[in-house]
Image 1 (cartoon, rainbow, N blue to C red):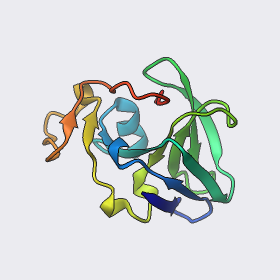
Image 2: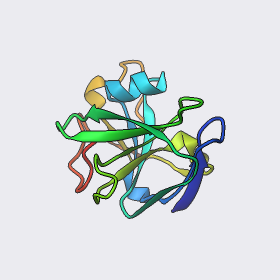
Image 3: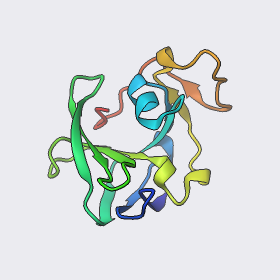
Image 4: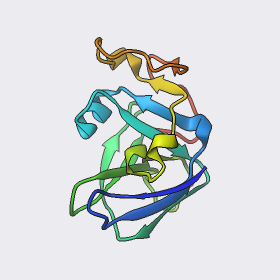
Length: 142
């Protein structure tokens, strides 16, 4: 699905082709802390992602896999936008923070990941597959 989005203040814009089979609610502690919520919605863009306006800031994070990921965020409002491979020229999955998409309401999760750190009071999302950690997806090292 082709979609686009922006940070809260509109300084950074992006567009991507999101694979509908790679949309998940992530319950890992990093996503809980970075979103300020019980989970964060993420969608994989394995073939097409670009910042179309503005320049994000980045910080590096060590993923659960031990690999380094570049976390893109807006330097003005702080909105977290995506997780990218450590080298901007390298191929690899971009994990988009779906709340920033103009099509957020249409991007329904097919999976819940990192359920071993899911809040006990959080119900299962209907029609999703639950994974205790992250399933192995080629190119995804979040």
